[in-house]
Amino acid sequence: MEPQQADQQSRQLAFDFAGNSVGGFFLWREQRQASTRRLGAALGYPLGEHCEVVLRSGLVLRGQLILDGEDLFLSAERGSAVLRVGQVNFSVGEVASCVRID
Image (cartoon, rainbow, N blue to C red; front, top):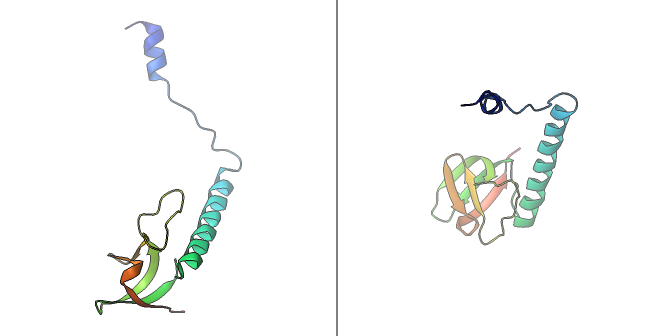
């Protein structure tokens, strides 16, 4: 291997994390949470909140209600949305009732 090739292979990418990168991350998180709340409102569920969910099967779940399998771009529709409380995933159609617990 030639010295020039070895030098190029041993280089690592350098990222400049100085400055406003932490602020950028927190801004992204806040925007993400706002998008999740808007999507929850469109679906009719308090996403991200502590809830009691009763499924049509009679199963009662208590915990934080979240959208399962969140992507970088939130785009679930009412008919295809999969929700989760704890380790239990369920579709919107399976929900008999959902109450936010404060």
